[in-house]
Amino acid sequence: MCIVGAGPAGALVAHRLASAGYDVIVLEAGPRFDFEERIERMERSIRPAHPPQSVWDMGGPRDDYTSSGEMHYPLNHARVKGVGGTSLHWQGMVMRLHERDFTGANGGEPWPIDYADLQPYYAAAERRIGVAGAADNPFAPPREEPFPMAAFPPSHSDSLFAPACERLEIATHSVPNARNSESYDGRSACVGYGTCKPVCASGAKYDATVHVRKAEDERARVIDRAPVQRLEHDDAGERIEAAVYATPDGEEHRQEAREFVLAAGGIEIPRLLLLSASEQHPDGLANSSGLVGRYFTEHLAARVGGTIDRPTRQKHVGFNTTETHQFYDSDDHMPIKLEFLNYAGPSPVEDALNADEWGDELLGNLRDTYGNYLEVAGLVQQEARADNRVTLDRSTTDDHGNPVPEIEWSISDRDRATIERANEIQRSILEELDADIEWVVGPDATGPAFHHMGTTRMGTDPASSVVDPNCRTHDLDNCWIASSSVFVTAGAMNPTLTIAALALRVAEDLEKTLAQW
Image 1 (cartoon, one colour):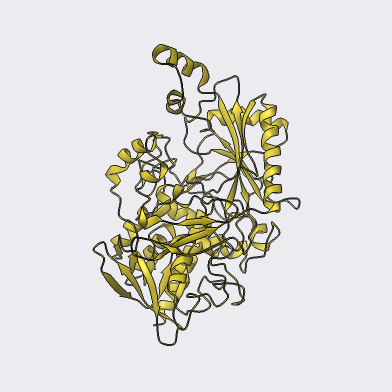
Image 2 (cartoon, rainbow, N blue to C red):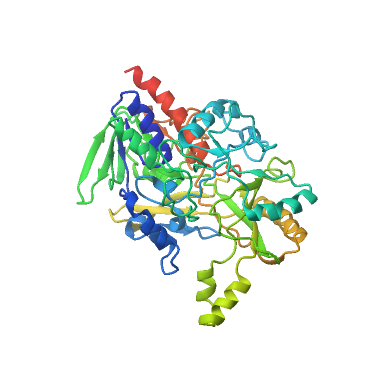
């Protein structure tokens, strides 16, 4: 097995197959990060002089990209290249998609699999990752067993939102989190650093290095700083023979394998397939449909925030503990997931840097003005459209001379209408709290959640999809894709748990395939 990418999907597949006794090699474009450096990275993340990209060493020619379309896409703002991938940076919320997401009832085309197909893999993913949650969500899809750990208790700000939501007949519930509410799988319980995104310094929040280590314990080999330049196929153009990767000294090496899994995310996977064009596949590998890179889909931000006349203990907890899925399954709009933020508003450091006062006067003003912010945030499903896509910008090259990814991104009228509906609900909650509303992130100011979906979509028809229902490419017998890039629709749930469930399903199918050799 050769796996491209050492994020959650690649790590889970590597661990499963290495545990079954197969020879597994993982090629990762970025470096290994020393766990002992996390406190230093956490401290860097809260210092205003350091931009978000610097925390995990993003930027420069290696990570160049271009953005076109109606809206700029800030690709490097929240991704990580390295062993562990963007799970090193993520917030850590892990929800299942709803049944209607798979049927197309929540907008868009149906998936070729349904919720029941993925349900046992969702449960397995929750066990492997370690999820703290509770069965208190009346809108959630069916479960087969309890969460591995108890949910985190509601934050102080949740207790302020709860009465207002009850008066508005909005049902709230806990948030499943991929962080330990108690010791689990050899990792400690959360110790409350509050910097979950972008750095968990304790290791209580799950990241893919957990399963990278497990895979290496089973004799898998992980090569870091080994960006794959292209995939080479056999003379017939039906099977991949090797992944060609570069090392820091500039040399190229050829890694052969029987089966290949692409697990490098929704941007780099289509880019690699397009970079691997050949005489038999002039438009790129796995691209007979012309859809590699198309249907790039995101989750869109909708937010309303402000201040109230009582303490909120903002930023005391660095992750969400309460949300509502009440407005998710609707015939009137696309899915909306609302989140009640306990880390809203500026930090005291930001307030101090922007102040005109000094000394005791500044301290007094900070005490008077800080600590009473609230925000209702939300993720909104973006409509999957073919003209949102990832292509190659041949006018700009990376540090190895390869064309960089170009992202063409815009939002539709349907997207705007759903964001407006989310803003209406959010505003009503803050008005019920008698809050002074100070900001609204609506259709004209929305941005991405940095969830890259849809660029190698799944389907049964090779003319209208890139992979089959088992996530194997239609065009190449031994190329599998474990990524949110196979999503047909985005839903409005954070995608990592679905990525993990699909990866475990791919690993199971691969184990059966390899057993036939």
